[in-house]
Each structure stands twice: as structure tokens, then as C-alpha cells.
Length: 468
Image (cartoon, rainbow, N blue to C red; front, top):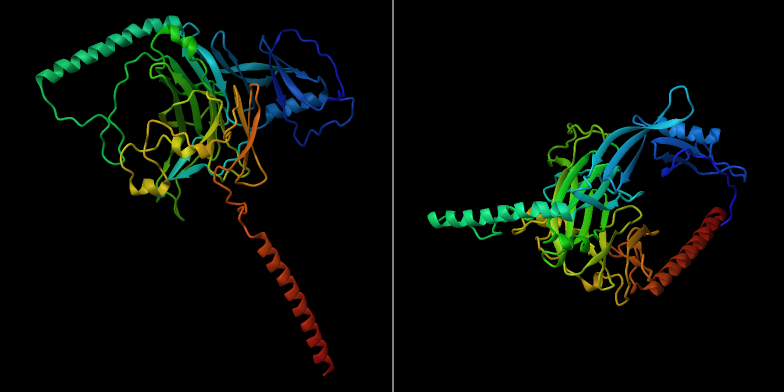
């Protein structure tokens, strides 16, 4: 590319973060070669902030961003070595044109117990079709939509795992011997494991295995943990370094992640859906409506209600992605880059944590829910890569096309780059391949000829009537 302008700015401390700022319509770009169009904040290691380029216009842009809204401009930093997640707000120094950082909240992932292996953010610019989900009984399940959500994946350190594993094994052994002693004295009629009434969940079973993988949902503004789940994916501390590839994708109120479970020798797919609550089908009428907050605040809003479920996949997964459409009307598909050099896709309904374990109720059938199955299917005609091998995919990106039914996806990161067009809801806004275009052309031309003849006949009739 061409360099329009360049300059140097002295700094007093090392730069830890660069925050680009979007210029509003009140601060137009400078379109000559003497100025820089982009304005950015430089966050230094000593919690000071500098503005580049150092011009009055740049300071005006930052001042507008700091004063925008009721809360201001927030930034956050993650130190993987110390495990510190720090949320800060940019404030203006008193009687000065400079800015500094004030800490709002801090969350520490103890590096002696767990290490950060992955951080994921929501997809920016994602089009949301509806803020709620219509259930089969016509009630509404409200989505928890937090643009400041950050997913932090941590793994237990070998030392910490070695300390907690004997305690977990001892608890499991005690539970086993207690069940034996209890079962020898009394006899109780019990249902088979997993048996439940139609639509009900299975009986809860305590998991005494030592947790080794943690998924934390953190708010980047308040710095607090919104939700945290753990998984037992290894049997020994020596296996921890072998299972640290945990791809994550965040879409709307969905969080999907995968990890290889050394204990079961398969890939587990974890799904989290975040919700604010539910409105009954009679909760909204022409004369009444429930009280709802029209604005979202990371500092004041309640924590989400989280539904979770874990599925199995017979293939290793190296990357995750999700489709994106123009208006968000089409159903979403999650894409998986598997270890056998394929890119497969699954409809979001397969990953719904609300899939019932028992027989489907009538309302669940109307909603389109499917009965729960522990293993996810690999459907050949839902494999975008088809017969092509895409080696070592590390990332999957998607973008919307000009028509709603189509989504463009790109798998890259390894020696191969794969691009394809997928149809999550089929081509509902496209003409089929067997459409008779010739007949349509004949009909349109015939209508145009008939219209022209009728106009001529009408004109001739009007002239004759005038002369008579």
C-alpha cells in the first residue's frame, strides 16, 4: 500500500495495548496527506494513556468517546502470566488535557492453580433477528445479549491437579463403599439410570472426578465472572499439556467450545446458552406488559440464567465457526474443522441444550426440538468441504452474502485455504435449478405484446368515438 503520512511519538513507558477509536460524524476525517485518519489510544504498562496522533482533533475524538453515554470508555487487559483480568475506565485528568486509567474491577485466575489457554470474544457486527426465542407453547425465552462478554478458558496446572486428584478419588471411593453398605441393608425400588418421564431430565449424578478444564464468562466492563463451568477431561497431570486446544465461538447468546477428553478418548462439545428470563404466553397483552429494562448495564444488570449441555463428536476439532447472514433470519449452522482435514457443519438445533431426554411433548415438537442424543451426527451432505481435504485449519470466518439464504465461509490457518458458500436454511430466496426460465420469458413477452395490442385497440376506439 501507499504511505500517506508518518510520524513518531515519544513514549515514557512500554505499550501494553492499542485501542483504535471510531470517528463520529462530528469529527470528519482529514483527507489530505498531512494528517492521519485513524485515532487510537496507547495504553502503557504504568496505567497511563497517550493519544496518537497528538493533535487537537485526536484529543477531541477521545474526549467525545469518554463523554459518550452514561458510563464512558472502558478498556480491559489480560495478563496470561499472572492470570489477571483487569477492567479500566478512561478518565480525563483534572485541569489537564491528558487521560489516565482507573481500575473498575479485577478478576485473578491464580497462576499456581490454572493457566489461561484461550480467550474469545463475541462476533462484532453480528445481525440479531430477534432478542427472544418463541417456544412451542407461545411463551418467550429472552436472550441475554451482552456485547462486553469475554470467554476465558483456563486449564489446571499439573501441580494443582496432582493435589486435588487424590481428594476426588477418595471421595469417589467413599461414595462407592457407602452405596455398597447401604444397598446390603435395605432394598429400594429404583428407576434405571437415565429413565425419566416424557420431557423430563435424567436424575442428577454426582461427578467426583477432579476438574481440570474451566470455562469462565467474564464481563469486560465490570471485571466480574458471570458464570463458570468445569470439566474433567484428563486422568493424570501428564495429559494436561496434550489437551490444551480449546476453540471457542460466541454467537448471540450462544457459547460453543470443544475439547478433547482424554478420559473418554473423544471430542466433547460444550454448549452454553445465556438467558434473562421467560415471559408467559399471556404475559404480554394489549393492556399489560411485564416490566423490562430497555438499556443494558454491565454494572447493574443481573447475571444471566445459563443452560448447558455437553455432546460428543467422534472427530478431533481444531477450529470453530458460525454462519452469518444479511438479516439474521436464516437458521445458524456451526462449522467444525475436524482432524481428518474436513470442514463439517451442524444445524444449531443439534446443539440446543434444551433438547429433552424423554419423549417429545407436543409443544416441543411444534418448536422443532429434537430428542437428546449424546453423540452428534456427521451428515455427509452438510460437509462444505465435500471431497476436498483442508489441512490444519486454525480459524473459520464467515460473512453474509447479498441474499439472506447464503453465507460465505473461509477456513484458513494452515497450508490450505478453503472458501465456500453455504445455505443454512436452503435457498428459500433463490430460483431452483430446474426452474423453467424459457416459459417465464415467453409469458412475459406475450403479456407485453398483448398489452401493446390492447393499448392500440383502445386508442383506435377512442378516436372513432370522438369522430362519431
